Length: 118
Image (cartoon, rainbow, N blue to C red):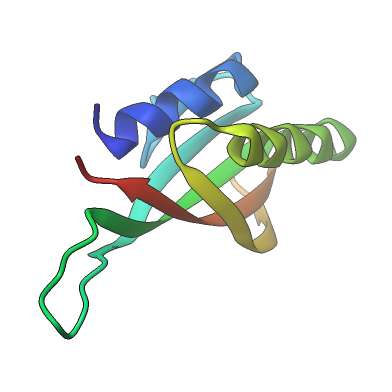
């Protein structure tokens, strides 16, 4: 299975209205989340050994109309990522946002994820 598939398996249950790659379909009802790969780098060493590990950074943007419910979803997402058995991750950044035309509050999370490429 790919890391993206594992990420979907981990976070889809948190977002009942949808968890989409990069952009939500038009007219998606909030709350929902979108994700994208920021970077992915295989672990290599100077002696040429490759431990079959890759570190990827994924950004997860969560959108909702209610700030308190949004904060709960953010915590649920962090808890799900921390408890994931398919990979190891840590949240390395969190930022607030507001989508003015859609009138949606947002939270942007960045996760550093280590996974086995075998």
